[in-house]
Image (cartoon, rainbow, N blue to C red; front, side, top):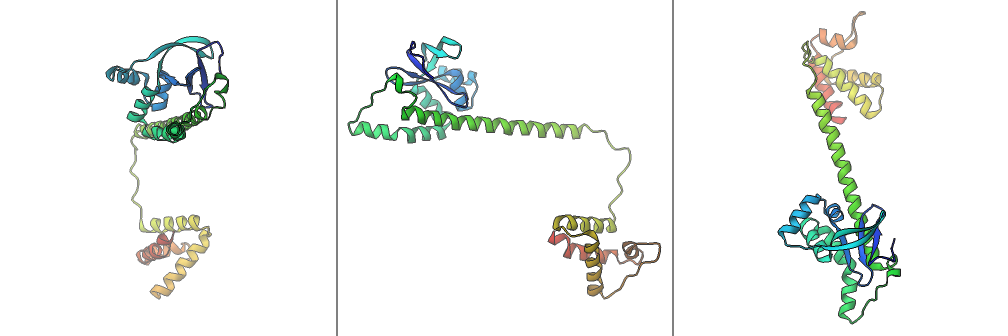
Length: 244
């Protein structure tokens, strides 16, 4: 939007980044808060950097959603230096957006900037696109930070769990075979009964030994009783676990 009573026009991106454009020269300015958002730094960092680099600001009355306010603005040179220091990728985008204007200047063409044309000016449009990309990067970084915080909190909650009062029994060989069969069934969409049938059949052909269960035990228990469970485990690893 623009304010005809002001020396500056306010250009706001959909992402909420504000830039100020001089009504007569077309020069672009940014407040300290906006320059901090664009570079991903804090306001304090921008202030310390500007002080140490002897970068001065322009005090001007500018339009805001709340009306005309007095603000300290960083000019295009300061924005360039900030991009060069912290966001060189944005500097590349600025160069791409401005190369046509620069080459037109070498060829003798000139541009006349009028306040009523700010909304349609291609340079302003390019700058707004750059700001939108930066806002997307900021939003992405904030989402990643939020996920990292959730992860850290979850790890802290796990560490805070009380120590178990009983010892976990060691996994036996037959338990390992059960786990392999279950994992293979889930991973490949094959019924567990069919996986067991194939495993027992493969054992019969590979070891040339038939294992028969008694009335009160399962086939797997029969392998344990007959001391053949390690054979079944080795076969399960070779034919099921490695193919899961």
